[in-house]
Image (cartoon, rainbow, N blue to C red):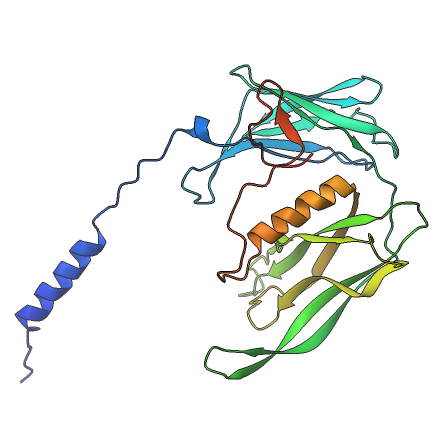
Length: 302
């Protein structure tokens, strides 16, 4: 004969009390979005791609949520006063028409923004810097050792992606910035001769929080190489990403000295080690300003 036992009453009571406590909501009163800074995220290059710009405002709770700024009038101006309009694509995205001329090295450009509430913003003109081309991008599988908090050494294999760039002769310094994205495929396992096999492709920006920059200022460097690391992937935690073809695309941008200083300041604020000696989190002022209220802090650099 089988006997069934009920769990003790005190165990059920304790579990119910625990679940009830976890389900109690915590209410936050988020301040009005009008108190938050405008974020301008855009770039204009010598390339043939469609140039985009995003306008948004951050969440007042610093939760990583941003709110798009819609119905703004955005224009690009060159040093001769020629105006090129951005078209709204929704969700805070604005794009220049495909017929817009490409940027020219040595010419100055800036943007002007007018929000739906009448506030006007403008970026300080930036001169298009000279083109700097890389001569090689390559990867290596390399061993790496990490030390855990309890003193244990963990050995693993990582994929490192490097770039080498010769620096052209110039009177001033050269500043570069890199962005890396990757595409990989995943193919289903066939379950039979009549089962169609699908292949999916995934695209993602690598190390989106990383700020990869370098300057030749104060050096006699003729190249940015010596295995300039632009991204690193841990193969142990990669899952299915490296079971098939995997592509890395390294985009190299030549930027102005003012842009480099902005990104360097932002890097120091965002990539702190978590000690008492770290600089406190702060808003980094870019090159965009409120025409009527220049003291207003605007985030981003165009």
